[in-house]
Every structure is written in C-alpha cells, then in structure tokens.
Length: 201
Figure 1 (cartoon, rainbow, N blue to C red):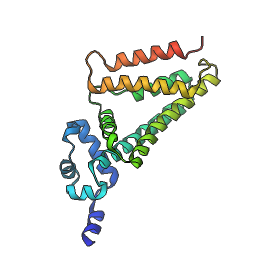
Figure 2 (figure 1 turned 180 degrees about the vertical axis):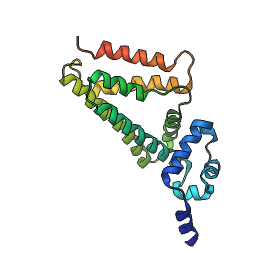
Figure 3 (figure 1 turned 135 degrees about the horizontal axis):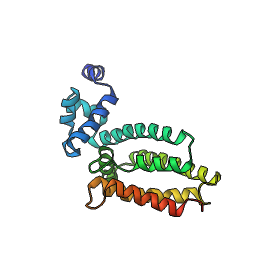
Figure 4 (figure 1 turned 30 degrees about the vertical axis):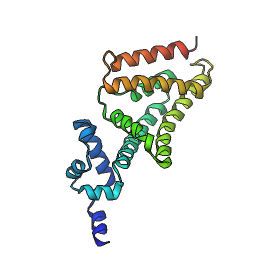
C-alpha cells in the first residue's frame, strides 16, 4: 500500500500524461505510443501508468476525451460569437475536418473506433457522449439558422446526422491520406453540399 501511495504522490498530473500521449501521436505516430515509451516521456514506469489507466485502451480513450474537451471548448467559442449561422457552420466544418494526413486527433479517433468493437458498454457510452456533443451543437446551429430564415426549413436533427456522416467519410479519407483527397477539396465539397441543400433560396 505504501508503494501505491508514493506512486500517486509522485505521478505527474493526469493532464500532463494525456498531453504527452497526444504529443507522441503527433510527433511519432500512434504505433510508437507504448506504455513504456510514454512512461519514459513523463518519468513513470509502465507499471505505474497501468495502475492509473488499467490498459492501453483506457489510456487512448482518456486521451481522446481530453483532446475532445479542448476541441469542444474551441467549438463553443466559434459557435457562440453570434455571427451569421452560415459562417458558424463553416467554422464548425473547418474544425471537424482533419488538418491533413495523420492528423493526431483523427489518428487517435480512428484507433479508438477500431478498438470499440471489443469495448465494454461503459467505454462505448463515453464514445457516444463525444459524438453526441458534436451532434447537439450542429443540430442547435442548423435550427437557429432555420429560425432566422438563413437556412431552408429542414429537420435539424436528420440534416445534422447526414452532414456528420458526410464529414466523417471525407475526414477519414483525409486522415489516412487517400490519394486525390486533400483537406481543401473536402472543404469545397462540403460547402457546396451545404449551399445546395440548406441555404434558403
């Protein structure tokens, strides 16, 4: 028990560990993120890391939740500034789509998605909560645009579901570096779709 107590006292803050994990993914790729390598980065043994996170799956999910928390704060600022709904929708799309091949956040997201096939119900609910936050913000923005006459009258929830499916598909192409699909092409496709399907005539 005394050893466990010392480990807790000497451990770096949880956020520091998660930030280090995200930095390693960005700099070296997900395949280089091992418990041992992360432990060396933050001055902990892999055993101590396992004490806190229980498994690599849990480390990855917590790192994703931490990264999503930062993105969520940025998304909140973008959507709250009060300009035209179309401008804020463009900002939402811009934040959603990966920066490019091997974007660290999307690299992590894809890995967590892949591992979710074998995840327990609690982990799947945490993933659903991340998805739900993006969805609720988009639904609210579309509904606002409709109410202000900027957008056509659509079912905001159904339309948001379709937009996010489009964004997910294109974003995966960008994140994996599919030849012939880059970020600017994707943004142009999505904005054209929004203009055709949503803008009031």
